[in-house]
Length: 315
Image (cartoon, rainbow, N blue to C red):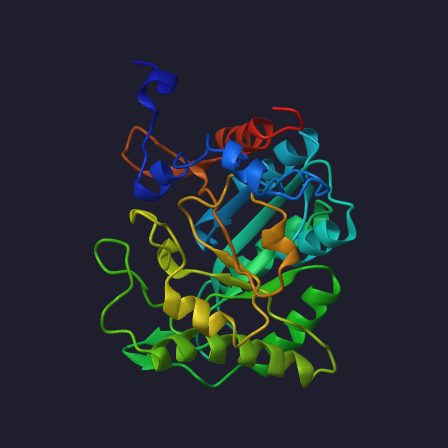
C-alpha cells in the first residue's frame, strides 16, 4: 500500500458542514419581480468571499506558509470583514478576495498558551502581503474562573496589528456554546448572558484600543463552535438573543460555520440595522498512516477556489 492510497480525508462535523448550502444561490422568484415598482432596478446579490476558519493548531510551518503560497498563485487577495464591507459600500469590491479568520486568541493576563503561535501566524501572513481577522476571547475561563485582568503589552501589540491592516473581532467573553441540541437557542441563556458574552466583549476591545488613541469599531462577531444560528429550523436565523445583543454594539457581521456562503441581497449590506450572517469552512484535514490528522494546504486552497468559482459573475 502506498502512502497516497493510505492517506484518506477524514471529514468531521465541521468539515461536513462546509458543503451545506455551498451550491445554493440567491435568486429572485417571479413573485419578487411582481412586488418591485416598475422603475426599481434589479440589483445583483453580493457574492460572499471564501472564508477560512483557522486555529493555533493550523499554525504549523508545514501548512500555513504553503497555504499562503497557494492562495497567492491562485490570485487571491486577503481581506478582512471590515475592509471588504467598506469596499462593498464604496462599490469597488475586490475581484478575488479571501478572508482568513483565526480563532481563540486572548489578550488576558496569564491566558492564551498559544499566543506565540498566533504571533507567528500573523508574521507569515504579513510577509505574504496578506491580512487576517483574529477572534478575541476577552475573558477566557480557566479552572472555571474568568480571566479578566488584561495584558497591556499584548494590547499595545494589537494596536500595531490593526494599523497594519489586521482586524480584531469579538469571539465573545467566555467562549460559550450558544446552541441547544437542536441548534436552537439555549433555554438557560438570558438577555444578561448574551450581553455579558457579546456586548461586554465588543466594548472591552474598543475601550482598550481607545486608551491607545485608536478609534476602532468591532464590526464582527465570530461565534464559538459555530453556534448561535438555527440552521436546522424551518426559518434559519441568528438566535434572537444574539441579535438583540449585537444591536447594542457596532457589530454588522455574525460569523458561523453552516450556511452563510451563498450570495446575499444587497439590502442586507445597505440596511444599517440588519445583521449579516456569514459562514466559513475549516481546513481540509487528512489522516496519516498513524491515524494522526493534519491540515493539507493544497486541498484547503482547492476548497476555497471551488467556493469562489461557484459564484463567478454570470454563473
